[in-house]
Image (cartoon, rainbow, N blue to C red; front, side, top):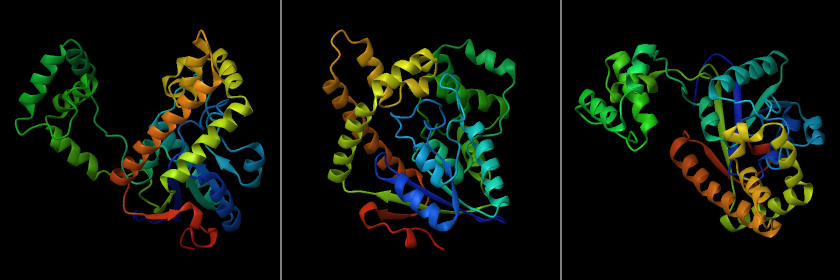
Amino acid sequence: MNAGGRGTLRVLTGCTAVGKTELALAWAERAGAEIVSCDSLLFYRGLDIGTAKPTAAERARVPHHLIDVCEVAEQMNVSRYVTLARAAVEEIERRGKRVLVTGGSGFYLKAFFSAVNDDVAVPSEIRERVATMTEAEAQDALRRLNPAGLGGLDVANPRRVARALERCLATGRTVAELAAAFRAQPGPFAPWRVELVQLTREPADLEARIARRVEAMLAAGLVAEVRALRAKGLEQNASAARAIGYRETLDYLESEKPDERVLAEAVAKNTRALVKKQRTWFRTQLPAHRAVRADEARVETLFDE
């Protein structure tokens, strides 16, 4: 997959509630590995119940990295993640341990297979000029600079149009040329070989697991967790506040007639919708990899030894 002069990174991914945590723990224990999280919500302290974060007992079984590295009101981004993840990988390897990356957050997961940030520097005067344009003016200017077309750019998204226009003006290149240059960049983990396994389940099985998971979260005190997080600035962090489990509970706390059955149904419904999106993303965005049914997975054969 990726080739380089360093060791091998094993990556275990799959949809929400598919069963990654226990299998990752079992494999890591057997292989003498440490786990690097690739879940965009496990970064935040206090987001425990709604994320099904590995418990203290589970983390005592195997060392984990990139869990609880941010306060809830603090923003994480992929650049910071790459810096922290590389440092964790290098530290683990220096101690002679194997590395297991696990999680299902697509944007962060993709960092292990390709570049995630372009290196185009946009001067402030160009940003300021584009900021003064209306949406129509920005689209017209971008189309003039790209007579061969804009490819798959979402022109209905004003922010993406503005960012594309800024980069075209800064470099003198078209959208297509910039995209080709970006694809040619080495990813941040290019020096490592990456072995990827996706854990899967039948839809009916996964839906039943989602329902049980939501019930367990509510029983464990999800509502109380969200109340406490609000006081710590949860709603200042859109990524956390709009996450499934948290956004529905925030709505529940604002409701004139809060009903935990309605809350449970909303969380389960939105989790099922997320799983559908994840399946599409895994199918279209991940490089070639092996898919393993969760009910047939064995630690002995999960990865190449």
